[in-house]
Amino acid sequence: MGSYFQEKSKMYYEKYKAGEFVKKVGAIIKDGDKYLTIIRDGKRAMFAGGSVDEGESTRQAVVREVFEETGAKVIALKYLKKEYYTVDWEFNGVTFPNRRVSYTYLCEIEKGDLSAKGLEGEFAENTTLKWCTLEELEQLKLWEPTLDLIKKIESENQIAKV
Image (spheres, rainbow, N blue to C red):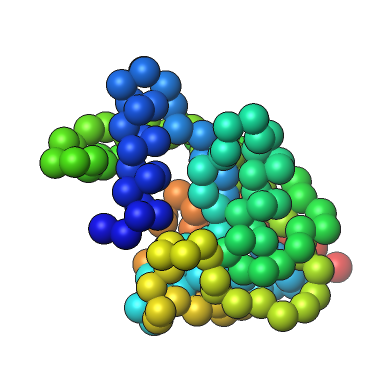
């Protein structure tokens, strides 16, 4: 495990011991009918996001995470939802419930050069960015609750033909 994940795991474990939730953010970046997607191993999809740093608002965190992970500058955002969930996590051989609260935002970004960069050690070398349609997202292994949110966004943007 690289130092990036070791530090994150340590922070998660400290939050667990203190009985606190880990604050996370997620960015659904939309342009027309496509969504900026981080693709790992050519088959697993995710959106930009991550942990909220100490003293940072969720809005500040989502802007920072989008920049760190894609190189993009957020120019507009809209709060979508707050969700509580738990994942099993391990730190120094101890498995514990990593309780999280996640804030999801719909984002618009400035046009420009993009790359799946992340922080040092965060992304594998075979990680890329791709603008995906809903149909493409359904083929990739996008987390089901996120896929459901995308479908809701799509259905709300439909205009009835007359």
